[in-house]
Structure formats: C-alpha cells, structure tokens
Image (cartoon, rainbow, N blue to C red; front, side, top):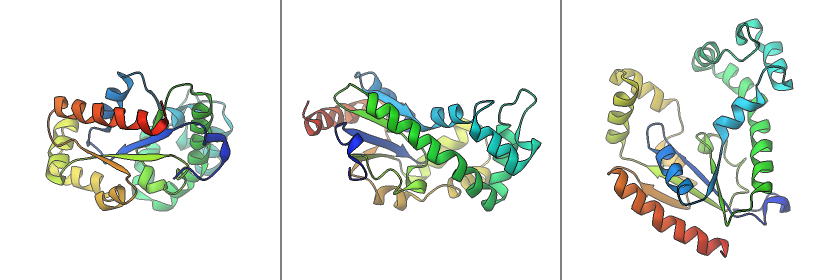
Length: 209
C-alpha cells in the first residue's frame, strides 16, 4: 500500500482501526506492551485544535463562538451534536482537522526508530484512501451482535442509540474491504493477546527486523 511518498517508505507502518466498541484500543495496547509505538489520530486531533492554533481559529470563523468554550478550547459536546445532525457541518469540520492530523502522524512516523509502528485511526475506512501510504491495515473485527452488546454496556445506553452510533460509522464491509490483516476480537482479552502476539511476529518479519 505504501506508495504515496518516499518519506515514509523507510518506516514500516501498520494502521489499526475497527468499529466502535470493537476493542481496537485494547489491541493497540497489546502491541504497545510489546514495545511498539502507537501514534493516535484522536490525540493528534486534540492537539491540532488546541486554543490559539490556526485550526481552532478557522473553526470559530466557520462555526462561530458556539464552537468554543470560555477558555478558548473546542466545545466538543456542542460540535459533536452539530455534526451528528448536519452532514455538511461534519464535512466542513473534517476538512479542517483531518489534513492536519495526517500531517502530524506522518511526522511522528518519520521520527520513529522502532522496527515498525502503529497508527490508531478510528475513522480509517471513512477517510480512505488518504492513508493508503501505510504498509498494512489491521482491522479489529467483532460480530455485529457482540459490538452492539459491548457498546450498550460500555456507554450504558439503549439499543436504539447504540444502533444509531454504529450506523454513523463506515460499515463492517467497508472496513474489511481495506484490511490486509484482521483480528477477531469476539472472544476474551487473552485470546486477543494471543492473536496480537502472532501478528507482532508477522509484522517484525515483514519489516525486516
């Protein structure tokens, strides 16, 4: 997949993603325990909209003061409600944030000195092929009924809201369509750890470590 630019070609990069409540964070942590760096798109997104940044200024210019809290930070609750109800607002916000997030992640990858590294990108399928420069795409997958039950339990929400949250993301088929590797996380944490161990060995070999 790694064909966008040469600057990341020397670094073996695995993008990890999955649907909501699939356990992608648990999978990423299992790689981190094995000494692999994981660069998180969500953390990068928070950094690029910190108070006083150009992105934050553009967001307030586009959406007004409702987008900002009194301390100058992004009002995430207000923006989350807005983009959930307005697809155009979502597209506008993503057009501001996503390119900066990718730029941040590319810089982190370029500075990485490990055998390989991970990019945790929750919206990987939604933003593909913007990340087509990675070497592998690992999708953490669960059966739909397991995902629904875990999401309801995790967030203490009703079935109807959980279904809406799942429907707001890319479909399971869309995620699997871009995968080069899939880990089934419908079982226990111990089973997930065993699967990660096998994948870790595989990625080390592919990276030439």
